[in-house]
Amino acid sequence: MLQKTVLTLLLFIGLISAFFLISCKETVDEASYAHYKYVNNTLKNININAYREGRLLTYNLTSGETLTVTVDLFTGPKMDDIVLVQSDSVNLLFDNTIMKRWLPETQSNRNPLIIMNYENIVLSGTEQDFKFTFVKSDFE
Image (cartoon, rainbow, N blue to C red; front, side):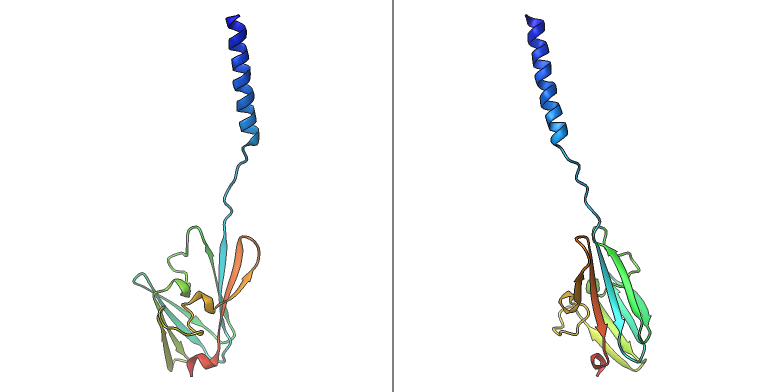
């Protein structure tokens, strides 16, 4: 009798365990990416000097060029990635003559440090494009 009770109990525990194992699904977080695109829609070069966490990051964006930086949203940008929306400030030098300085608190729809000023294109559930286009009037 005791043996039958133990077997019934083990069978019951086994069925419950099997139910939980079958009903559990492995969920793995998918990587999410943001592609930041900076487009030079002017006829002159733009030197970008971005400051982030005490570091100076520079890039020369030639006329008609697009700089694309892909960021894994889980790990964030690499140390040398120029992602203006994550910068402390940025100096833009247009044609080596006109300097424009932007701070995050500078309210303007042309401030490249403010993400709301970017064109946002959702590519999929895990990828987005954020595009900022520099135009000549930015430096007038």
